[in-house]
Length: 83
Image (cartoon, rainbow, N blue to C red; front, side):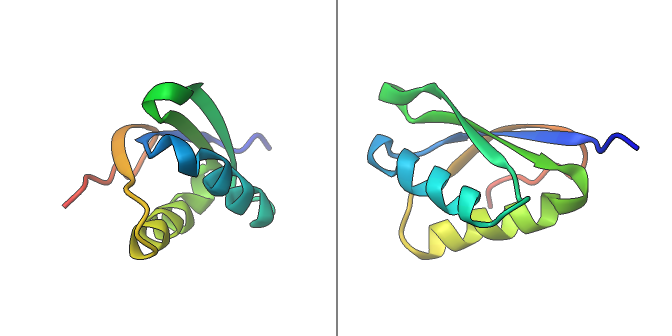
């Protein structure tokens, strides 16, 4: 069975791209980060559809740590907007 993959486009501080990528990688299976435009802090996070809520929780955790994370787009189900 092929798992559906969701793409979440983010804008983050350039200095935090590696930190975010490292933490996603440390959560084995949560997903992976692709750097799209490093100077602008534009990245895409890919995650299995079944873990999309976990990825949203991860993003909320980054924000709780003081990392400025803006969701700029979601491809897949369960879109979440910044409140």
